[in-house]
Image 1 (cartoon, helix red, strand yellow):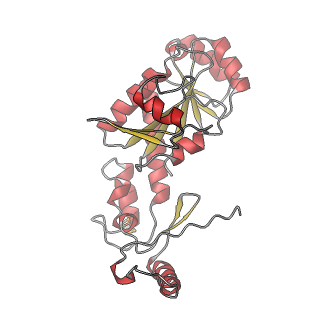
Image 2: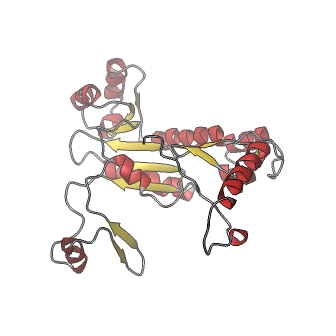
Length: 263
Ligand code: SF4
């Protein structure tokens, strides 16, 4: 799971979209893969359009394909977690516009000190404050005294903060198997190259091509070669014992097992 950051504000027109646009442009230009989720108060589809008519007729899920886009619409009461689960790509960071009541870390866009004071009372997990209020040096000092530890930052500084978050996340995900398969030769060397901005997590060959992968709530559990082999043989042995009908196990390339522990 990539880090998730919500960009929030107490009122409209505080620069949330401008900040997200700035971050996506600059981070994408640096080669980071960014996904975004936006909270909207109005339905996305337009009444009367063909796609709207499909959904009105009772379609469970509608996919529209245009020359440049693939858009999926599901009519459901969705949470931020549902939005995150619906992402099909594997980004380095998920930027969210809105969802100020979520439990995810947040960057607040604000105009005045009073707004910041109110937001600090009402919104949890604010890791930084930006927007017009960050342009005023006096306001920066006042806010630092209201919420010690709260960073008041300009857009460029927010960019640096987010890059650090992505790199810290990558460093945590290096499996420390020291298999020697990547061009850096060791996990420590790859970690150092990532810190210098010269490598990416995907340079870890072992993460890209595991023989078997175990994930708990989407978090990958690092497994060395032996537990990977054990897990693979265990599942293969179990699968071989089943009646598989027309499926020829010799031709199967990938097996996925998911266990729901809440049942
Ligand atoms: S491929 Fe991954 S696990 Fe192997 S040495 Fe490189 S960083 Fe470590």
